[in-house]
Image: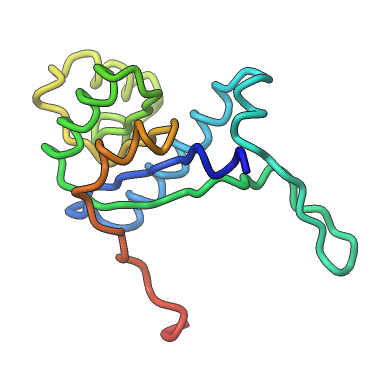
Length: 149
């Protein structure tokens, strides 16, 4: 199946509080999804799931979506490696929080890349491209398990 050849990987900074990480992950997903043209939207294998009552749950990807953990310097290095390999990559940093979006843009522009604290990255591509870049990272397991809910 074509959907098994590609995947989406989100790598989050394990040192950042989970509320901020959820915000970062949502921004990464929203931005990445919105940036896709019609052809690459097809590459995401977006499906409409229909529940037993006929309710439609649209735009859920058939691709694997893996969430991994890292620290800020590992995220910086991963971003550099992904960009060098031509792998589509979105990033979210501490400069993108607090204040208005204009404040965030100014703060990001004023911060050299080596001083950014990375909250997360989203990568999209073929498994054979992503696996060598991400294999050293562990699964992110920071949120409450179903047993505690």
